[in-house]
Length: 143
Image 1 (cartoon, rainbow, N blue to C red):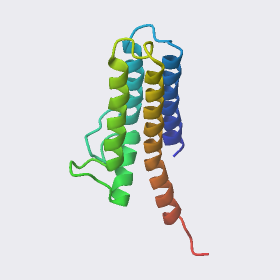
Image 2: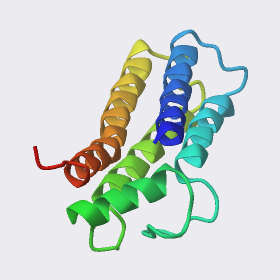
Image 3: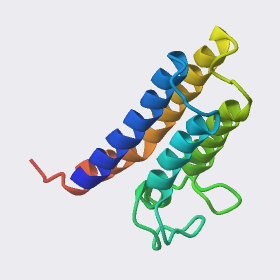
Image 4: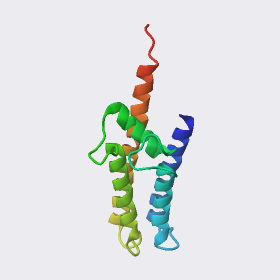
């Protein structure tokens, strides 16, 4: 659990650091923002991951798939609802940063990126809460 929470915290840090750099026009090149989001995605998914698998993979994507199985929240494509939403939000954030001078042209672009990151962070909490509830129930001893 400690490793998952530390990794989750690092991903959130990476996302908010991207937002801060966008707000302060701190990207040397336009693709630097996309690279930061891609790095966050890589830490979410990890290596050896198969779509929808709760058995293969090692990081938060797999943890989310396990939570989905525990709470029966899989989508039609076999992937957890939470992972579907998280990956969609990662993609939106990266796409937002792909436009030339995305952070330099207007203040609303940074604000929109902030909204996306807030929604993404909120969605990333879902598997943590699912596993907390599951483990509290599993470890509940008759009192």
